[in-house]
Length: 119
Image (cartoon, rainbow, N blue to C red; front, side):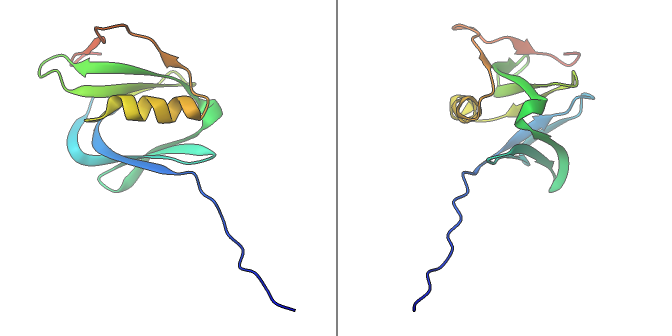
């Protein structure tokens, strides 16, 4: 009797970009990595895990732009009230991936809100 290899299907997407932390630190691309897996979201900053949340811990995603340079990004609001911004050259791809995992994506219309130093 023969054997068959066991295959694991992992639905994982990895994005490289920048990060504005909940406490206001701003790191430009390619300092951050956003990994969207089947069960959780992981954000790494300079290779270290900055945040990891199961999908139930992610309240919503929203397209934003940087107030000064207009850099595109995705604001992630976490269930504990923290907010952070993942700077991305492809924010819509990130938002689509979040939506496929059940994260509500807020519609901002044609003009996304700006993220300033104090926000």
